[in-house]
Length: 255
Image (cartoon, rainbow, N blue to C red):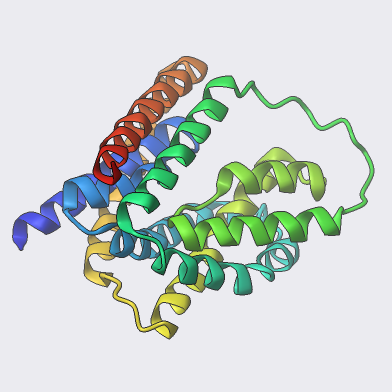
């Protein structure tokens, strides 16, 4: 049992470190680490990840709140459809067998790895219009909430572009606001699991968060000393390779 908590701490450290180093993408490691290192089944790992990623995002957003970069009105508006979609995502993953769910997650990892590998530095915002594209924000909020409940991920790779382009936020505001939305989705996911009477390991989540917080600080420290584009590409290849290995393993199980 003690070893399990040590593995959870180490997993949080790795996930948080990746997040601190790359500025995004680290949360995608939470579920695989919980499954393959900590030893949780995929359904429990998704629930644990929802809580851990949500709380970690809240911790990360505090400094942004102090700088008034979190736009709460837009955050709550975008998170509103997630009340329904997060519940639906959590409800649907309950009906899917573990290997099939891991196959889907592996494909998501490969996709996110590809996005990170091809992502270029964000250019300055050129649209000076103050118009907020509410339909786009609501749609992306619904989709991200569903992905959060189904896969146990934060969904920042969808939220940040939606807030940047759809709400005309500056990049720092988009990142700050997305972190708070991820926290809301995590709480929606926790409520969904509790309403459905499903198991969530809150103690493992807590240990994971402690490791994640420490990893985030360490990762952010070294991120200032390493070329970010090179680091992002190396990490994206790492995510793709993990995704491929998970995909092949579970394809063999199904076969």
